[in-house]
Image 1 (tube, rainbow, N blue to C red):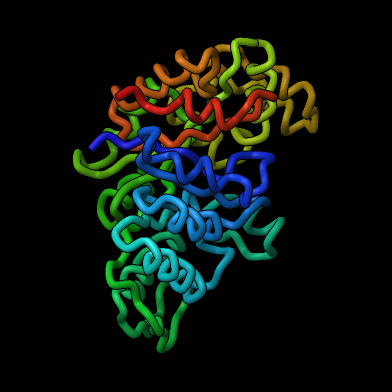
Image 2 (cartoon, rainbow, N blue to C red):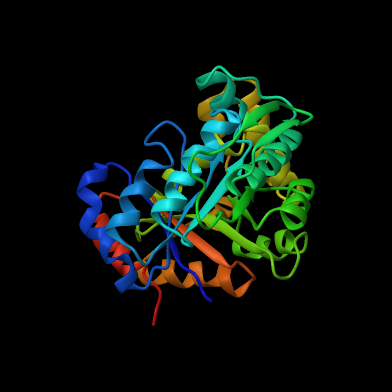
Length: 317
């Protein structure tokens, strides 16, 4: 099945005011709605509402950090949405980043691969309704059992950028979630997965024909995100190390303005989808053509009518 997703809620619009749009997504051709979690809304609340507003959508978290909730609380939150949307919820988990985990949530960001693996294994057992007593390498759980396990345990997907985590996703999870990649990067990522492993990616879409404005926004986002060590390593692996070397150097030196200016236009055009709505939709399709199963549009604000842009970016049928 061809999937086509949207990140909810849209930026700058109160969640309660998005009911009409989210309800209309299936009729527009969208199959999925995925939430994110940084410093805005939490990942689960939008999906609770969407489960009632749009009963035909598949819902997913992309992603919930494995450090910012205890294992039991994470299982409870996932079970709640799985119960509200049986067979339509996907739990996406991942390590997140030191800024979010340590800087904003006062948790230790240690052994991200192992912590993600152990959380995945715990959740498999907990969401199946088992009583879990286990000393995992990175944490221990004693006698935890969900009071109400979901009738259908949700699939679990892993945030994965490089071969180690991608291979873990292929071995033990139900799919991989990635972001900050170009259509031409998809085969490199896809090659680390099993042929039948679902690959989802958040795609940043800026539907405007003002290329300077789109690149200005893209440049700011790239210099903020891709200087995070895990994303820097990801793009080294993808082959952008030389193109981004100046940005990284200036960022390390504390020259944020210079680092921002050093992002090449070519990198922005690779990683940020911009142009007319029609051109944007065609580029999103190019990700699918290169092996992406589930594109998840993250709409960047342009000052235009976001609801109308979402309608225009719907897949051609």
